Length: 101
Image (tube, rainbow, N blue to C red; front, side, top):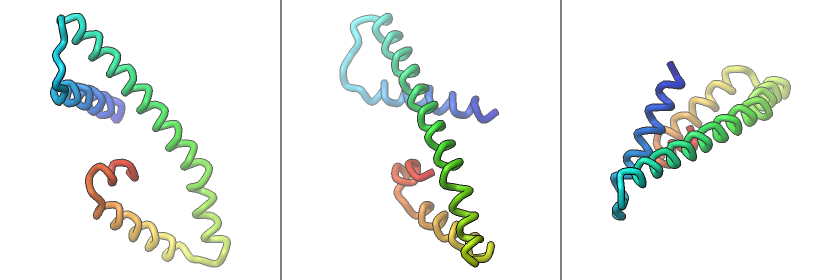
């Protein structure tokens, strides 16, 4: 189910970018070639981004939380910290928020 949502987002992004362009294509084949290449590149970008997110979560996520708990901070302080961060992210402009999320 999650992959379908990512696929829909990728296709939607590509078509929005196509509609925002001011240059015109010479033929239907050129448009199809552009759409195919744009979808391919966007999918590659998404896969790379997901790999980076996964690596970051593996490296820093667990170590950060365990370090907080090990240094005498309790779980409540950790939860409060993440609530504050989440609230700050919600207050960001949409594009900036998208980068953080």
